[in-house]
Length: 480
Image 1 (tube, rainbow, N blue to C red):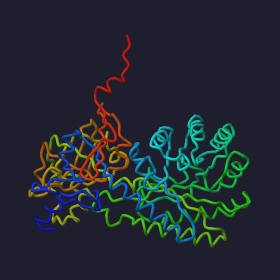
Image 2 (cartoon, helix red, strand yellow):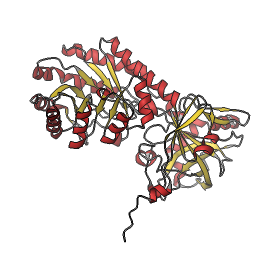
Image 3 (tube, one colour):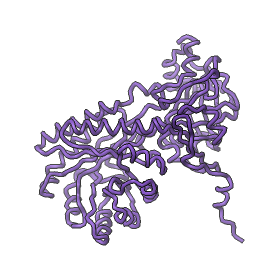
Image 4 (cartoon, helix red, strand yellow):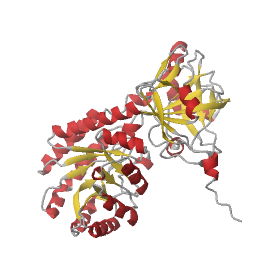
């Protein structure tokens, strides 16, 4: 790239990464989200600040649900689409998802409470978790939760007892591991054999037999989730094939075709422009999944089951942006150091058209960090960042955005290009933070969690209150 192209790229708001409403507007070229300047949001609600574009979340929910349901209809069946609330949940977001026709997937008593407080129909809730307490199970049964996913043999007995005591027949799915290893971070791959979720697929006939021994349980099918942030479709296709391969034997146990198959979620999104070309098209993915289910069902001579999916990140991820304020900057020489050979830096230079290896890196410190976005520290995840309060003609610099915590691994953005005049007081916008940022947030170093604001049609409203130092201090119990 020419220097002018590099400068433009360092200012660009990529609509494949930021919410569709994000754009630079007005003479000063400030970033707007939902029609509101980022600086106005920070002035009113503080910094750091999570911002969620309501229109982006709702439209993406409709898009994903529609694609999966149309694909299912195309092979003669139906699909239920659950929103996986672990990605991001509050009462308002649960209402959005229910309004857009999605069912709700929860994984704890707390998440169940939020969904019920949002007015979600309990019959449209699925309850996950590898260690659901007896109290949580009893609550779910009493509330009328539509489906409980059995994760272990212990849960079969516990759910059966709770259902019998309540005088109901509880719908259940059995979570199994198909043995398919998703092409993602090891901690995000959830269907290989040596991990905490589910049961081996080979054990399904025995476990389903145990379920069928209880009149209070209604077994409706298998569930499998191969992982998260998955771009390739091969894993989904192979997992579906293996699961359906078990259905004829299970049908012999039940005396009827197994009615449902839940293929989980895990569809990836683009966190940076470099990832955007490889991000899965949900319509294509949906058609491929429906096709392999229909093809495999025909191969085994069984009816095409009803399908269920559990997307979370792919619905809410791109709708979110986190705003920070720059506190300090510093430059570190790379030439002649081990860091100069960082292949990821070299790949960035190649993509940006930078002819020479980077000679230095600018560290840009912001007023948040790993307490509001743990993903870079947990998974080595990368993000895209832009200056939000202005556009700049300065030559771009290689930057690493870091937080204020007492950890060298406190990194928000591993590497990106920003105008080299980024300075204290600037507002930075980090894209695609709608999923697993607020949900994984903490009070490390006694830093209060930021608020969450929804933007819609030029207006902003608080949907999750932020915390204060006084509130954190009030939790300490002083004796004597």
